[in-house]
Length: 237
Image (cartoon, rainbow, N blue to C red):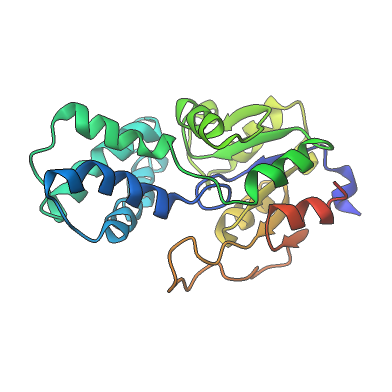
């Protein structure tokens, strides 16, 4: 089987390994509620995340030079604060809030699932998050990654093929020897086009209880799993 040739696993992180929506909502509430500011915190998190792809698109198109995701998140934060009518935060408070993305909680199955997978495979991030952000998440969530790779190392953003292929190259592998693990169909389709193997992990509440996308694998990926523990079992770990 093709997956018998897989020598390492690369992980999408936001939504796949960690729960960004609930975590960001918690962080924003924790900073703003004591100041008497009350909004729909999960809607705030969703609105912040909604600016993620448009901001990266400007880098992919060449409209602006590559900047790390921390910079894009900080720029996007200003627009979301304005949209929700939140004012009066100091610059240090905004910077602290921006680093909420470094403190996202993992899905409960992620730490034990990754620990099992690591017994057989080297694990690397294959995320649009920058290195410092990914290191923060790994330490915060006890996530046993062997390497922090992805966008900043490749100087580009998924779904550009160079991000997937650079990650494989940095691990000393051919693209087909690296498997992307992700909860997003479009990410896996792009990875497969770049030569990687693919594993879909279901995260049906990433976007909240009314989620309508990525509820099932919509393509013939190499592995489809319910969570990281199920993935470990399916890969013989």
